[in-house]
Image (tube, rainbow, N blue to C red; front, side):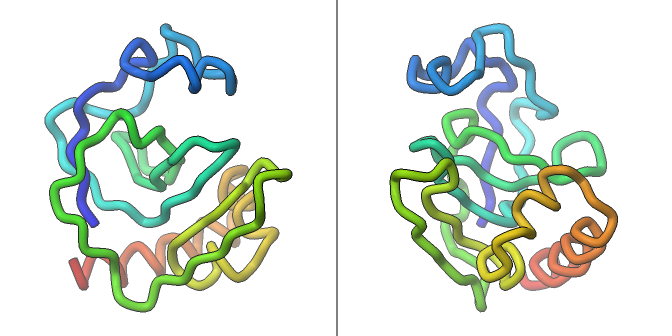
Length: 130
């Protein structure tokens, strides 16, 4: 799946994002007009987020409202899990570890070495197939 960045500013987000901690002055590691590959999708606190690699070299979750989908096809072999609305991570879709290892989401978000190694392996696989 490919997405085109339309904004890198919190001022482009809807009010629902501000209720979740984002602000109009939030800045994102993105370049408007740049196409990014999506490595995971989650519904977090009722917000749709994409797992991408921005201008830095690390993966991060960014609000879907900052993008326009340009190629909607999901990679082969992706998984999906729904956890309910009573938890912060409501649902997730992506590669095996992202969906099927509950602790992996936090490890990747915290940029832990082992999680980053798995991400890099999966990123190469997805990049080769897209």
